[in-house]
Image 1 (cartoon, rainbow, N blue to C red):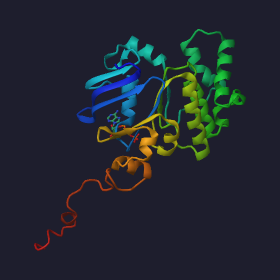
Image 2: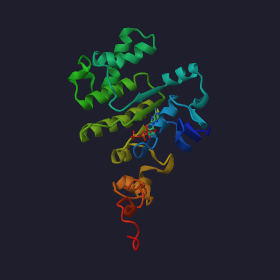
Image 3: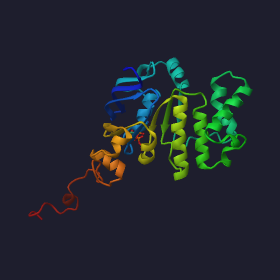
Image 4: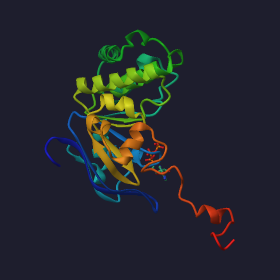
Length: 271
Ligand SMILES: Nc1ncnc2c1ncn2[C@@H]1O[C@H](COP(=O)(O)OP(=O)(O)OP(=O)(O)O)[C@@H](O)[C@H]1O
């Protein structure tokens, strides 16, 4: 592992059964940085997060997080690693039968022996950080979608994680709520000094908050760069992604037989 990196994937192959999803993927995330992973649907982005959290193991290659080799970690090591990780997944579901305070307190009660009075203070600090201290006594059903996502963020950072994993944290939010959560993610990360990886489709918001972007397609990293590099990139894949072009490096048309053959027309001159 190179000095300064908190995460490294080196020459990782991964398959579900006999279907290969990732091929010879290498990437790194320096400590304290927020990195986005973008790419088309089904390109393997969530699988990359699962490799980092030890939910799946690579067929080949190394996965290093902090001082842990996650590709061959044992269950005690995985438990220690998960305690240092916070996760905010799509729709970051709250426990509907617990108050906001109890939702954010959940990981603190599960993972620590802190007294109740201290847990309460920590929860209020985390809720204050996401601007929602006033909602502590509410139930999740009484929150808007954007507020619920912010409470889920407060819960994800309750244990001051060293690593944050975000999977589509903006899905289903209106533009204002989306901008708020993006800003909070950036601010929380800086305050925690955490290293973070965010899978997202939302290229424009991400370019405003992340330090670096990896683009994934066809099982590999096809482009990468800082937001400034990405904005001016001439790489066809990046251009298609950033400018929302319908056709480009990723083809609009799914591969198919010759059109004339499909229509039963035969080839010109043979009809
Ligand atoms: N548990 C599983 N078993 C078998 N195949 C799976 C499993 N999970 C995902 N896949 C397949 O692996 C591929 C990559 O999935 P992954 O969820 O990593 O993609 P993604 O890039 O995150 O997609 P999206 O942006 O649509 O969420 C997909 O084709 C998916 O169908």
